[in-house]
Length: 308
Ligand code: 6CS
Ligand code: FE
Image 1: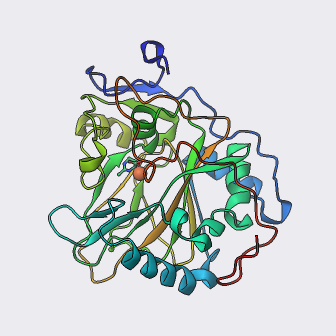
Image 2: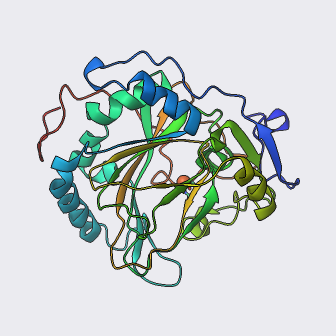
């Protein structure tokens, strides 16, 4: 990427700035699978607000997904793709589950998730990152306000805003168990952040992010126009949020874990370039630079079967 003329340059030692978004929010939204297409109302809501919540999409698969994650947790013990919480040893995040589980890989291609994603991004897509965020009861720590795109642009060389995160609630997400906070409409501006990224920033940022986190004065301006929304829903709900939507989440001090399975989809027309400056690319468990375009399953998964 030509960072001299980078429209979304961030963390290059300048002051924080609110800039315009120069990319579309919706692309060519012709459905690729009419049976699982988003309605015009859903497309409008996403364009205006930057996210969508669709209840009861994966409820039937929950026991299988949870069982598979328990298997991965023990199989991957000690692997660097497992991150613990800051200040305690509870598991915070398990990265790249789709690489280690054929079943989870198949979920990324299930038409109930892939059809809406392709429709929103207007092209074939790849999975660039996947993770399970565990938010354990009592010990799950917060994520500060950030735009995912800001990190992916600087640290992974993602050129444009043509990516999103689709995630499945594996437990109920309530007002009190550390739910996702979003700022509807905030995806229409871009915040270029202060600071400079050091090598291997991810080792600390994935436990406690400090760079790419807008200052309170900037957040005050954003929040004047856009109040916070809390994403709540039953286990099995599907949530999609746009890559530049400002979001974060508080600590979980309740007795109920808030577990989610997340997939980051990037358009094949948005190929990753070099990270900013002289940053080394992040490890492939955080950013898969060789991901292949996904082929949709012919029908939704019913249970734990591999019927590609
Ligand atoms: O590092 C990432 O790819 C993502 N994770 C965090 C905690 N912040 C930035 C981005 O959303
Ligand atoms: Fe995020």
